[in-house]
Length: 286
Length: 222
Image 1 (cartoon, rainbow over the protein chains, first blue to last red):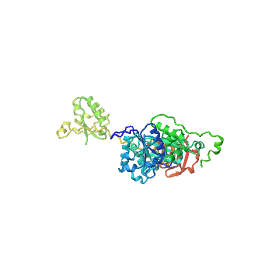
Image 2 (image 1 turned 45 degrees about the vertical axis):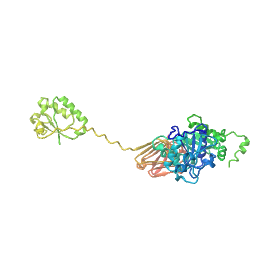
Image 3 (image 1 turned 180 degrees about the horizontal axis):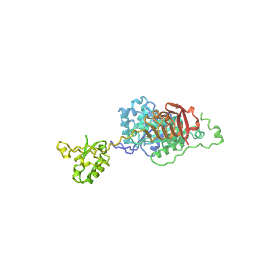
Image 4 (image 1 turned 180 degrees about the vertical axis):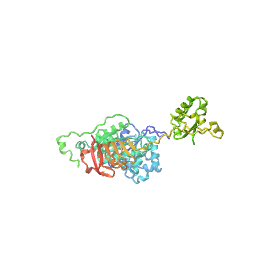
């Protein structure tokens, strides 16, 4: 068992609060939160992933901890439980913890002061506090980004997702505490569900198109992949479940970039298929 | 109220001090009637002609002369000015006072009203930039779902993918310029248009939008 710094009042100056957000639903925020969280933890960082999607929690499932949730974020915010009681330590990576959302409540159960005190307390224990934002631009999403130091904007190469991401970037630049204090707010783009074959046929936006519109630095490109789906279904982040897969490597590389390493970004390309593959390869994609 | 100027010897130093005063408190002398007391200057035996022309050359508004017999001015250009026939000393005896000329630097003119707005970052989806006072310049893209509303013209050094509404005040003379034209809506002076009605040839090209005879005209910029 690792030893997070539990000293009372000890401020972890290196701690970073990172919101994973997108505006649009279903683009891969929770998968990205879990995968980046586990990749950072595998790199030796103390990480907690916090589910802000009160009422529609998913992060516990993706991390395979759904049967271990006793207390949650709302209990801590409202003072019904201590933070230590609500933190769930991952069984596979001992530097990874989860703070689950409450499934029986809604976003109104969260308050700005309550969230601030939880984040402040987490800052003392962890290097990375990853806030998994709910979709939308309402209270839950606003509170998830409110105290963040940086953001990972998850975007699919589709115009609807790109426009919603643009909207969220505008809010990150105006509604976060850092932005209100006049500080610059660091934003990174995680392009997920990238389908090289469809991009090659011009059926979805290319990487350059998305970067041109959003104008923020690229953190990584995750190809659309059954590895990601399978991992989610099994409750195991893809970086643990299948570390050799393209998706797992994309997340691991993104984590290294967040830690300040310079890692070249590779754009996934279509695999060369034999005649047999070409004839039958697309059958599964309905 | 008139000011009294009494040149005193040494005259060179006195004129230098006057010039300094004129420079520092220029507004104070503007259109102020001035009476010249020549008593002291005369006592010194200075040439009246020289004193007269030196004072005149400074553009002062001289209405009268005092401190000497009017006959002594005969032959100078001030011969016709009223003679107040009083010595400076007499005036002080009667409770007159020498004035302290205030050191009032010319008031700095008020800054001209701001008539343009510069935005040095992308205008994101959902954001509105509204500036009724004049032109708006944006360095960066205007996203789909964003809008820029200006009293004058709109200049976008980037892609216009959202709405640009110009000419709230300037009316039909306002224009819209952008590096990459991909707008959702453009409007000038209340006349609007959407992509359905313009040719796709302008897509992603540098373009300007003008209002001509009540019709929006989009043209590619070279």
